[in-house]
Length: 181
Picture (cartoon, rainbow, N blue to C red):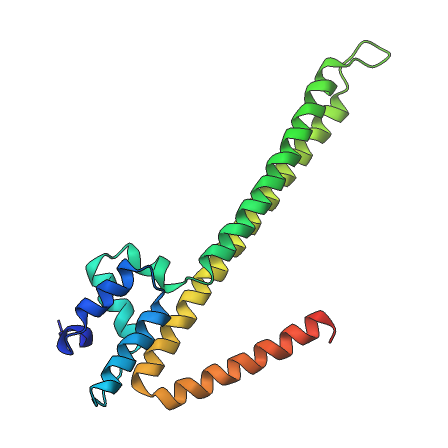
């Protein structure tokens, strides 16, 4: 296995100090590269190298640190949707309990209402599961894209900068079209 660029350049302490301070990966990366520049070294550390180094220390820590802007937003969406789904299901459970206790004019349970509440509960659960699946897929796509961009940046920083700029422009165009601007 090849020696990590971070180890080869003697930057381990800086990385660990950044982690202890709670810095995100981009901040640590900028700090490392600024330090290398002040030493007059032409080497640069890529995000991919930093991520691999951190993963080698604690494999479970790297993905969460690797996605600081995505994970909190996805968690917020999941909690909001989960809370709303929980409220909707609680309301449906109340209506189901009422429907199970009521009898129609023939003294029979209102089976249509009971089945309707059960069906609506099932739809709410399916909607929540589908949304969580989409959020998970979006996170996996974002991680894949970031990994590819990091590899390109490590191989050719100029090409990576062009790709990031093109992605940013496409994102702005898409956002403007969605907002009607």
